[in-house]
Image (cartoon, one colour):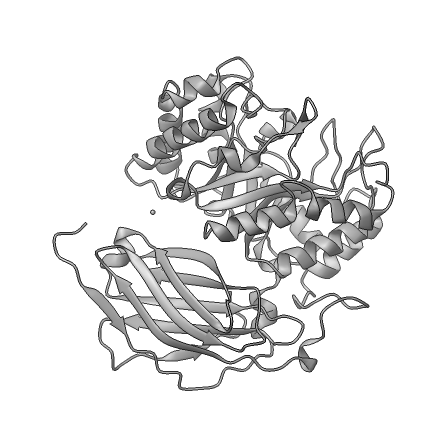
Length: 460
């Protein structure tokens, strides 16, 4: 959000691994789809920079552990931006050490331009960061570079001459540099802010700054419950605006799907604002975010349990008792991950038809480094499935659209995964108003006769 937030995947010879799939048992649908789609399972938190104790306090309110934590590098000058020793010292001894999302500024407040970055002038700073992260045991961290670039409040805003092109080129410079460090296995999150800023009566265009699929692992969006609309007092109106406006939630979902990337929400929260444009103690916003995350392929999301000079999103400081209560109900230990009760929500699982899901072909093509799947699913099924491949000690996650009862998937995987002769693929369908969710886990082997399908209960 504001500037103070900065304290926070050729081969000479090829082969095709042919996969024989035997569906030996009908999968039960109770528990599996709810847990697989449960937004509580992908919840993380920012509770202050380098603050394991604050995260633990948040978990105590929630009644369950968070999936990851979020932190920010300072952006005042290069000497602090590329020095990550302090947060590593804070997080490495904690139980969160392997579950950190780091937000990395692309430029310090003290100077520098996107054009300079695009030319490679600042690569050495990011090499320094990558070396320190790998040495500190965080070589697989998720890195959110230059977030909210489609706003106007950060130095790396695309509101500059040739800004979008320079931003995308600079992003490629950083990713290429950081990936080149031995031991690096970072994931990179390209993160917008909900609804692009207006400049001289015209909105910025988030998509124009996309650096390309080879340089992005996640497509993220930050969203807070605040609005400058004349009708902002109505929480339903605010939510509809968040969905429908340019570069809003619907755009985020469709853009991520078009590029085969999982969605993320690295920051989200309610908003108390001094200028009275925040939604305040709004359980409605909590409910809508829960349902949006539950029904879309969101890899992770982080609640912003913090108050800075421009916005107070804290749930558990006593100022937002209704939102806090609803948050714990929906994301806490007692959550089933199911749809919201009440008018206008999807039907309960007991009223939905069982989903048929059958894999007809699956293979890994080593030369092109691709996972190819062909599957049939109930005609009434809709939306997307989530797919995870575990092979070669690496995990690849992505979403695929259901089209007319079929899933046709061709997804690039890492060279290490393609070279392996065994792996596990998990397909998860969350369900809709008429069909129940289902999850299937398959063992992939170069030998076709010894495969099996397992029920997936209570697993993501």
